[in-house]
Amino acid sequence: MKICFLGGGNMASALIGGMLAKGFAASDIAVVERDETSRARLTERVGVQTHAALDAAALDCDVLVLAVKPQQMREAIAPAAGKLTHQVVVSIAAGLRLGDLARWLGNYSRLVRCMPNTPALIGAGVTGLFADPSVSAEARDIIERILASVGQTVWIDSEAQMDAVTALSGSGPAYVFHFIEAMEAAGVSMGFDTDTARKLAIGTVLGAAQLAAGSDESPAVLRERVTSKGGTTAAALAVMAEGDLIGLVGRAIDAAAARGKALGDELGAD
Ligand SMILES: NC(=O)C1=CN([C@@H]2O[C@H](COP(=O)(O)OP(=O)(O)OC[C@H]3O[C@@H](n4cnc5c(N)ncnc54)[C@H](OP(=O)(O)O)[C@@H]3O)[C@@H](O)[C@H]2O)C=CC1
Ligand SMILES: O=C(O)[C@@H]1CCC=N1
Image (cartoon, rainbow, N blue to C red; front, side):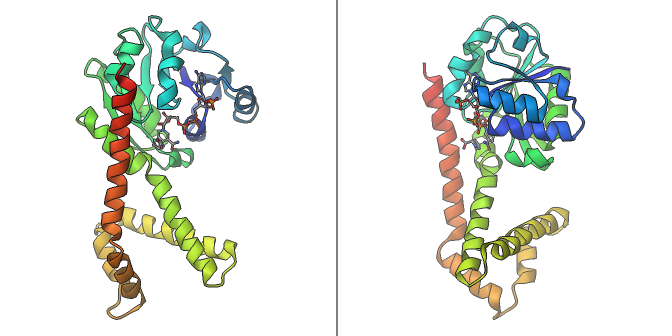
């Protein structure tokens, strides 16, 4: 099975890195990337084949993964319009809807939309998937196999939910990194050097996430176990409640989902 990525940026690199670590052969993976330096990096360091354009050689694949920015997509896929025959096309772009992609590809509907996240690089990604009803079970299995190689997969029932997946898990690693930054900064302000503060912050997030992932109990119960009455954790959580952390995170995730929908509306309008 030959897999070609259109765009060799952050997310394509994370997916390819994770796939190679899971045993996909570099010789089965190609990348169309317009930037020469990126092409050289992909060939020399990652070992995959590269193409400068989405030409016939690049389209000689079974799966075409669309991994350019939403704003770049229409122009980037134009060379493939009317030239697709059997390929399953997978878009990882935020916001863009299958109907618009199908139209831009010359009414080609063998399309799957998915939203991975960057922990795919270490096999710890989460990907939401949605397929056009015309995509066969066999084609869905192929796409599932690719994304499951880099982490967990969740098929969703309606395409509209993809904006929520994007807001929760697609963008989600950035929220967690931001929280780590905040913990690290607090550690530094209490007198630790950056390395020590970072080690304490990352170790805590990692340990807590692993504990939550392996536990039958809810995160709320696990939180209560840390929180002694009248103790230090209660003092911190009171400040977080005062600042409405739950509401703040909810509003942030709503804003991400709204931006995904707006991107789909804006870019699909013409
Ligand atoms: N980053 C993330 O965490 C996630 C991103 N996504 C989605 O993945 C997609 C890619 O995001 P990301 O990897 O962050 O973006 P990047 O900008 O890092 O990668 C896109 C790459 O594609 C190149 N490119 C653009 N147009 C063309 C073209 N016509 N032909 C060949 N190459 C082209 C870009 O080059 P140039 O720099 O010159 O424009 C760039 O190198 C987006 O649609 C995003 O919504 C989904 C989930 C998570
Ligand atoms: O920020 C973005 O738009 C992309 C989609 C999800 C993560 N990064």
